[in-house]
Length: 121
Image (cartoon, rainbow, N blue to C red; front, side):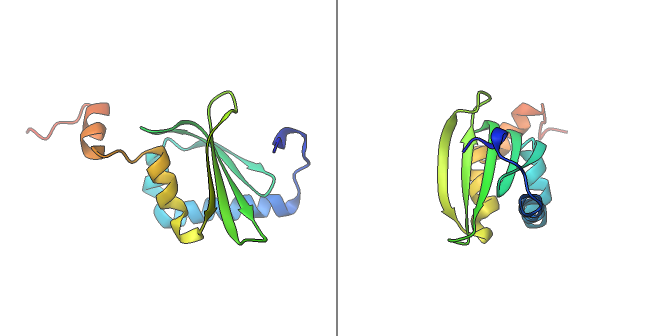
């Protein structure tokens, strides 16, 4: 779906707000750990950029009203789809996003390395 040529409606804005509230409510700190920036309204969803350990690029979340589920698209900086995740329940949304954007096996070690943190005093 090319959102550049579609007119954004009030319903789209409301859905974008709902998705953003879900992300913030479930875990605001986690959301910020993804390097979450540049949130914009898209048709039936929300688009934002991330700078995570796994995904550095664009994330689009769409609400499928007929299924009452969400679809997630991970895109590179050239808007090419890298990964599509379909049929995501609301209570799984943040966890699935985290597993695809940020959460690596050695997460604490990577955070310490990235920010020059040391456990030594």
